[in-house]
Amino acid sequence: DPCAPRPGRVKMAAMVMAGAYAAITGLVGADALRAAARGALPPYRAQHAARNDDALVAGMALFPAPDAPAWPMAERARP
Image (cartoon, rainbow, N blue to C red; front, side, top):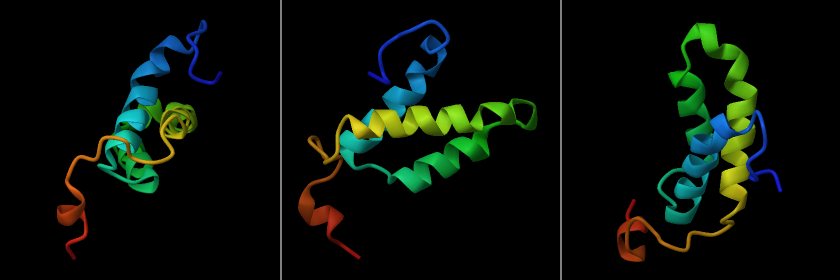
């Protein structure tokens, strides 16, 4: 299980949860979430970008379809 706590992975829990939250609510797509996470990293933490991406994707994989949409369908369908 890529989300199971193990030594060295505890720090990634917040990123996994962010991915899961985004997926279950449909609040933001995977590409936008990953781009925002990369953009928020200061240069001295750039070495963590790939692991953050992996954690976000692992969290999003837990909920392949929104189970608790952030907005009702009618609102999401608006252009």
